[in-house]
Image 1: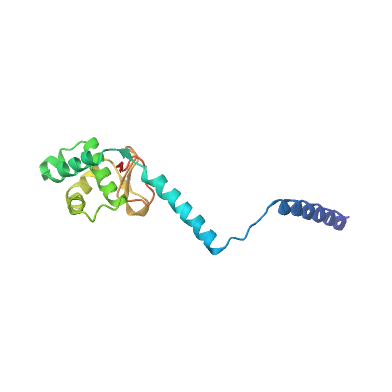
Image 2: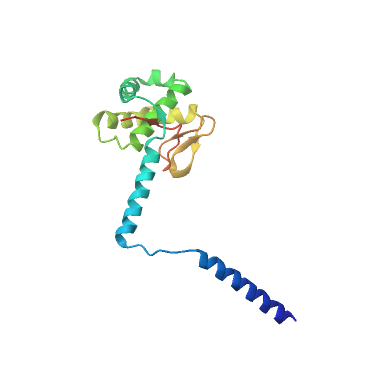
Length: 159
């Protein structure tokens, strides 16, 4: 009896499986078609990540870079959390948008690492997170680069 039940189950299951597998049509793509699909997906990914961040004009961004690069240590220690989030966004934007090759941004990154990092981590109550960056749950901002962009952690610079 057990054998008949098992056999019947296998027959029903294999019939169902055949009907499902027949509904799926697979097309073997040529190498050129595969490369074209990869390019399309890469472009979609790039476009979706290019528009992430808090919107700001490039000229305004550059003014902020200049302003926060010129502060001395005593002024930096007096910054509130809103100012520190701005500084963190600048730092993350430079990294994410691959702007560190430009001298003023390279200078800002160095200045950030020497003067802002420890203060931002403390005042924003950040803790070490994925990718060896810091994350402030209280302010939902990453300090450093986490791999995937966070909308609140960087600026969007329209072209």
